Length: 197
Image (cartoon, rainbow, N blue to C red; front, side, top):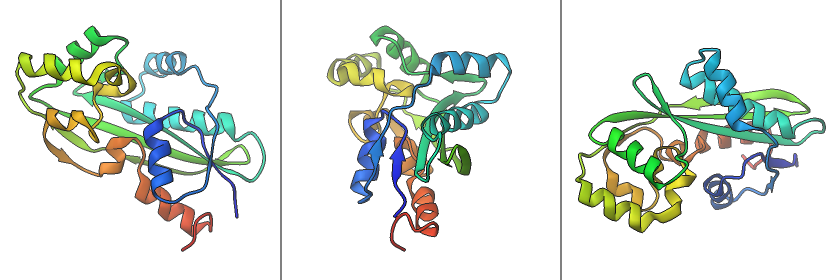
């Protein structure tokens, strides 16, 4: 069997692959994401292309040589022409959520598989999420209960937990919202006998 490596420090991605019964290693990519994002944005890349480029860079940074299949992934939250990154502190999380409430944003999720230093598969999915028009009082309670968890994801929420209360509609793949287009990835891995068909 081909070795599978997840090039990500994301607990949600790790949990998804484990829950799906996959055997894999985790190798955190050595990528300065902030510098890469700044460069991609300076080049005028669209959010979809930024997410794809970051996923590719992460996978390739771990897949230097060898036959392992390395999965890299990234997400971009886009609202109109704005792109949101993970908030740096609770106040930035508050501002992001105030800006997103009552509106529909795109959560662009890209995944790449690299092998022997080359990209062999890529997939991008774009779920649409509508935040409800919650009150400032609710926002205060949410931030207090969620704590530092709001700093670990773009948009300051995890849909699989308390963050579900921020929304009134989600259109698209649930796994992609969590950070990985799992079903297309599993299909690719079955085609290549990395998991049993």
